[in-house]
Length: 339
Length: 291
Image (cartoon, rainbow over all chains, first blue to last red; front, top):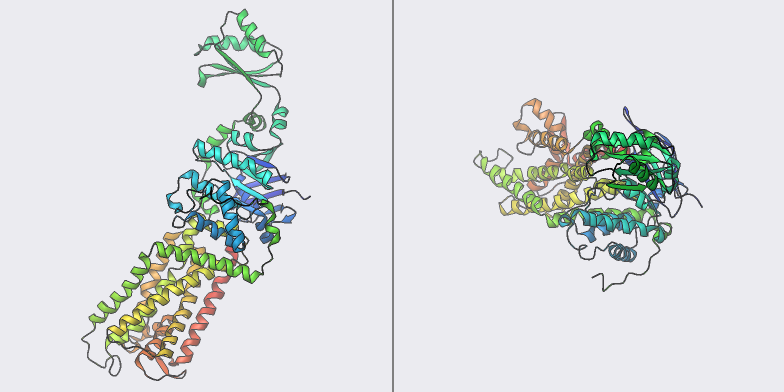
């Protein structure tokens, strides 16, 4: 069976800017595959190339074995695309929107009606579907957009930042819905700069930075590859700097503590990277007790995807995000997204 | 609603494979759907249509009154200015409507709605153009009907059935070419501000440099040349001819251009050539943007 999506050495430039440098990834049927990276990393451009909205400069893209470059129309039939910006016609009702969508994908009349009933039911849009979309809240708009993307029964659903700007309740609805898709026969590719989102949903992840894939695997594999555990330690609720430095010196002396950072932003708490071991917390507590230092709070966790990103790029996703915001050119991006 | 209808269990991924319809049926389905969208918009926001009908009537009444007292027979034997003006207003209105055809497409581009159409497996993306043309043609014929009716009411008379068929044909020919150009601009220009500016600088000057408001014989020679090369004149003069003459045939001379007499059939041929040129000009642009 051909992979649901196969992208090999994709490259895409806009004038002087290289949006995608070299992206290769393979998504198996029935997977939820996550593209994780800060804004401006090339996620959206990759998806636009995949959905035939942009012509790649180099590389191969296949959807279920069909080349999106040589046979774009055949590939479009297999794809559903849910863009980051929800573009609805506010004068139409939700049902009229979906009917338009059904005709654009050439569903026969009766099948179109049946499918609309199914997706409306699946996304709980029953109360809204016959109202004009101009009256919808952000969450309902997104749900209608998801319904439209799924209407023709695509083999692959491509979602760009599906929960950006949504309230917590709507985000939960979208997540629950996305988790159900593989059992309905749809493969999912989701781009997000939210760690939790990718961690919670994706079977496998590709981390993208500056137009390149810098790590790929299941979230567990990626975390294991970084290795060790993370321990957050608070000596007091607000620890004096000297005391924190003292504790840091004591703990770095332990052979299994790899790294210790005093986090000034959080009341001088200590962030430790340690080798995975079950007695880590007990040993730390014993060491501190020996120096007459109290423990206000201590927690041990596995590395997060953020640690994976940090290990690969030398900065956290949040820092990359902030740096990217400074580099962005909204006018240029608007132009790229316009056809 | 959702509680009363239990949707049948659906295999979600199986649908794309069973598409057996012909490309032509697909093209018709997508074109009808996009045209329906435009008509739903019109039905829920009828302001543009209402204004589009009121405006030419104002032209007809106010502009007609402006020259009401010119010496009789100046515009042709037994013709008053109202009779002369009707054809100009019909063509000007059709032209203005078609010139605006690109605006909805431009807004779809700006709001990302066009992407929704472009990721869909359309049989041909020219269905987007076809839907706009169908919509504008219908709208323009409605406006033309209102002008013809108002003209008859104001005493300009009414051409016969064959004459009305000429009016419809000419309006459709003009709308096709101008719509194509407007859609081309909608894809070539960066945004709606630029498109509106382009419409603004085209609309009235082309009206004044045509035979819509005054005959060629009134104009200085340089303007006479411009008006005789303006496609609008080739739409206006045949319509004016069927308004002012009982009998006509393809050889009837409808315009005395500086370079010679233009016959009825020749004027129609010029309009057809204009359409072909407009479509040829715009086609590579649409191809590139939509491929």
